[in-house]
Length: 195
Image (cartoon, rainbow, N blue to C red; front, side, top):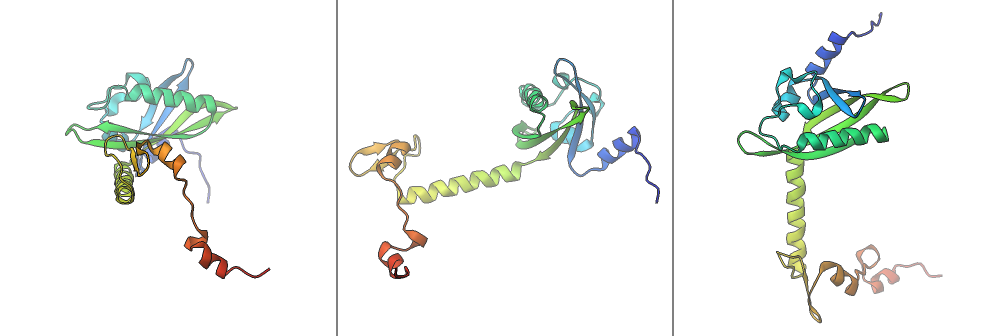
């Protein structure tokens, strides 16, 4: 079987067929990032114009999106180029129907002769993951507040001796002592081998 080198149109077709949002940014002098290609998933998530290929990142027109999103993405791209390492960033994006979606951007530097010439950007809707994290955090807070009285506004904790204390102060005054393997010291020592 003979392998042939892919041409630019083959790459565009491949990117368009991927099941995740993907963009390719060309790195130009002066920290300028030009959108070379992106698939329909990107345009759907960012609500951008598919004709925006060839535009500078900071000049893209995004509908119903936070105005500072492009500035943050520009800063992220500069960071990835300067550190030459991949990084992931997560930002909320407002949709036309006023819902907020959490979008994850992973930027991977593509190097040529030890110089970053392009950034491969994968874009994914992480809303379900963010909502699960928030539910978990709320559930943990609910569990903790059932053991301790915690102020819902400032998160201070009631101390029987000192009244309301900030969480850090409460933890300093009441360090957590955990018995070995979840057993009391008497039970833990009963199973300890004799020396």
